[in-house]
Amino acid sequence: MFDIYLTDVQSHVQFKDYPGEHPVKFVLSFKKIFPSVMELLLPVLPDDENLDNMTWESTNKDFEIFKKLLSGWGIIELRLQAIRQFKNKDFADQMVKKAQVKRKEFAKQHKLLTSVELDYLFMHEIHGLIDAELIDLGEKFYLPVLRDLWKNDVSSSVLNAKFS
Image 1 (cartoon, rainbow, N blue to C red):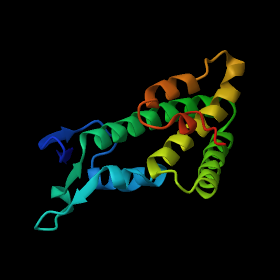
Image 2: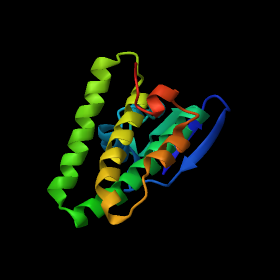
Image 3: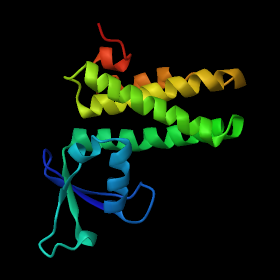
Image 4: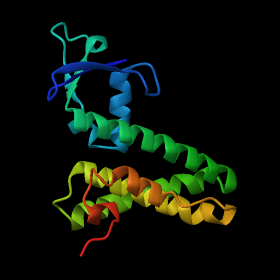
C-alpha cells in the first residue's frame, strides 16, 4: 500500500490499486514504462531508512495523472494480450518497442514536451498500433477514448500527436 501525502490539499491518502506487493519495487518497475512517475510521486525516505516504511508526496493533480497512467497501462496490457493471441508474443513485443522508439523521436524533435506528455504520446502510439491490428477483428478504435480521458491534461497538439 502507498501512503501518499498530497501537498496541495494537505491530506494523506492510501493507494492500494496496483499490481504486486511492494510499492517501491512497483514504482521502480513502472517508471521504466512511464518515466514521469518519478516526477508525479516523490519518495520520502523514513528516518530509519527502511524502504518498507517509505512514504510518497504528490499533488492531487499529479496523483490523478499517476492513476491515469496506471489504468492506461492496464488497458494496454489487455489489448496486447489480444494481439498475442491474434498474432504472437514477439509481434506484441515489437509493437511496444516501436512505440518506445516513437516516444524517443518525439523527445528529440520536440524538446519542450514534458515527461507526462511523452508518456501520453507513448500510450497514443501503442494504441494506434494496436487499433490498426485489431480493427480486422471488428474491435473499435481506442484512440478516441484515450483522447477523451486525457483532454484536460495535455495540449491539443499532444492529444492528437500532431505538431506543426
